[in-house]
Structure formats: structure tokens, C-alpha cells
Image 1 (cartoon, protein in one colour):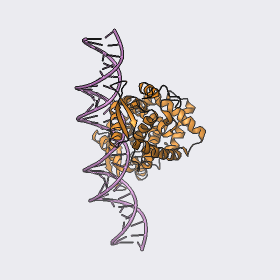
Image 2: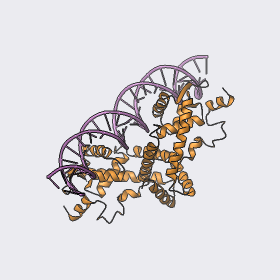
Image 3: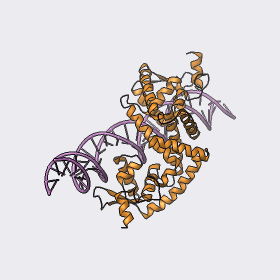
Length: 159
Length: 159
DNA sequence: CAGAATTGTATGCTTCACTAACGATTTCAC
DNA sequence: GTGAAATCGTTAGTGAAGCATACAATTCTG
């Protein structure tokens, strides 16, 4: 074993001059930063919603159905970028907890129109307060202009 | 059912003036945009790596071990923001495919020093070419200055 | 040296995302 | 109109991720 290898093994970040940081060349990969940022946000969200026991996806679904009552599953999935199968399991879970109800669409018999229940409305109200806290935590590190810019850049990716 | 409700059911995006876009108030949530952007990147990555059958996490792990040979699992997990259990399963998978090998650290008997195998080096070489393509797809929508800014902003979230 | 901390390991649970198939319904083409 | 194609919901199965918990081995601390 070389002296450098021993150094690396003891403290991998030390003794290596070329990669300036502990991530090496990975630090230059934009996709990697998106991945890490998402993970950090995901974890904080999960923590913030431990009491309500809701995931990002579930809150998004409730929120969207609240703003667009009668939304079909396929529409919901499309806007949240989920396929039909994933949308199903999300709606199933929310329906099982009586936050959401399905209703066969009168206009199109293939579709299920989605509506919030009273319990769903109530929990969404609490959830929005938690989202506001979560967003405050997230946005605390940025100026208003930076937030606007960040949202605009991110939107270019997922649009 | 009101006339507006019928309209909504037929075409949920139409007939609703208040929310300017199809996401309603969700569009103002930064965390939501991070989530969608990550999803889009994740999907494109999976598609780009279908042949190599590698995930983001696996490529990141190979990459990091390549730059820091002898890295311990705990160090690998720490830099990739994974807990020990998750790191285990990732390393297990890569070891099962003979891309990675474990070696008990001489300096610290608790640690497993990680090294790439020849096969691991070879596949990482191919992977890096795919990553370059994937990054090109991702970065095509931004200027160089925007990319730099975006990375900096994202780093503030996960640091 | 004894107890505390660290690291790896094993097990189990949950969520997420996707594919493939099938039935019901609607829409399109002729 | 009628038959074919497309759309939507549903179910089942697969795999990756992430987390908590518990336990063993090793190292560190006092």
C-alpha cells in the first residue's frame, strides 16, 4: 500500500489535491446536484409531515383535486407526472383514508371524477400550513430574486 | 351540479380563470418544482442507462470509489447522503455484479475499504460517456452562466 | 481494562415508479 | 351505423430507494 493510499483510507478527503471537494468530478454534474437537493427536500418534507403522515405526492394530489374538483385520474397523474398505475396507488391510499372519493364521470364513462371529502379538505388545510413552514425552511437560504430564478430554471427542466 | 362544475369535469383546465396554469397554487411551491425537475431528470437518466442497467445511485457510487479508492462504506454513504442500510444494498448490488470489491481496512478493522474491479472500471468508463450525453440533454436548455447559477443554488440546499 | 462510540450487517416495512395485461367506454374511420 | 382504434381505470408483479431496528465486531475513551 502506498503512503497516499493509506492517507486516503484514513481520511479520504485529505491528501488529494486534484478534486477540490469531497465529491470529486461528480461535483460538476448538474443532475447530481438536482438529485442531492431533491433528497434533502424530500427528507425535510417527510419530517415535517410525520404527524399528518402524508407524502409530497399525496399532498400534491389533494391540493390539485381541491383546486380542480372533478379532475380525472389521468389528468391528475399527467399534471403530477405520474403514470396511471402510480396515480392509482396514490388515489387508493387517499381514498382508503377517506380524504378523496371517486365518482364515475357523467360526461365520460371511462373517467373517474375525483373530489375531496370533508376530511380531505380539513387535512389539506393542515397540510398547507405545514407546506408553508417547509417552504420557509427551504427558501430561507435564498433571496426573493433567487427563488424566482430558481423556479424558472427548474420549470425549464420539467416542462 | 353547477354549469361550472360540468365544465371542469369535461376539461378541468378550461373555464377556471383564477389559477393561471394547470398546477394552480402548487406552481408557487419551490419544493414542488424541485420534485418535478428531479423526476424528469430521473426518468431521462433511467432511459439513458437502460442498456448499462445502472441507476443514478450506482453510477455515483462507482464514480466516487473510482476517485477515492479505499473509501469506506460510511464515507461513501455520507457523501451520497445515504444511511448505512441504503449504502449496503447499493454496494451489495454492485459487488454482486463484480463491479466493486470489499476489503477489510488494515487501518481500521471496522471499515470495509471499497475498490473498483477491472469490470467496474470498464463499466464506469461507458457510464461516464452516457452521463455526458445525459448532461448535454439536461444542460441544453441553459446558458453556461445559468448552469453555474443553478448548481450554486442547488448546492445551498443540499450542503 | 471497561464502557461508549463507530462500522458493517441483517431483516422488515413503506413508498415510488414502471411494465404488462385486461375490461369498459368512447371516439374515429369507413 | 358499425367495426376498429384509442382512452381510462384496474390489477398484478418487479425493482429501486429509504428508513428503523437490532446485533456483532472493532476501536476509542476515560
